[in-house]
Length: 305
Image (cartoon, rainbow, N blue to C red):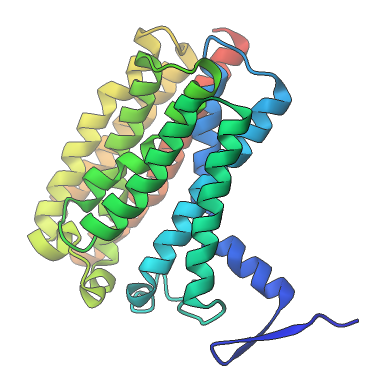
């Protein structure tokens, strides 16, 4: 029997397309980063969790991240349709109804909280709940459309996953997850401000007060450089605090110096076409920078260097 067809916002879509749309609603690329950084926090913790509980707990963390993404897309569907970067999301395209996205986000939030509490502990569940609430209420609803510092404060939501991973294992918080939190927290502004430089017109059209829109591109370039410098000492702290090894230290120094170099080039460049290209390079490189910082922490703990 052929797939049943459903009518949504005058757009005919199949069940498989609806499934894909709900999956996209959960921001899978963000979910993958959440799972990975939470895994690092879980693995480096001094208390070991059995494999099955680890997998199930991380699954509910991922569901929580996806739920926050769905609520974000529900709330921002009016501005998403105005931006080239987001106009192809399920809601602007009419693949899903607004109410469906809202109830999906709420349901997945509740499921993730109940599920994590069932397989882990109260503290990890509390941190996950704070993460979902912070991302939606503080960042999406309160800050994003009101202040150019939205991504600085709101970036805390994306920095919580390694803390969740650590608390799943230990039911406590110590210096290690705090350092991992700070690495992501300080990485976030330069990453997103680089994006906002070459997508400046998008944010202007959508009325979102990103830093280049409000304070100008020169001021934004200076702040990208400032945060790339601020980030560096925190990326080498895992080695000096003893929860990462020499591979992580070499990676942090090499990637960190190159990131600062790119940010300095961006700061000095005056030609719009050229510095948009540099900003694009910073945005892409920053993803690899964060990934390799966390992956080498994982490697060092695995091989014991």
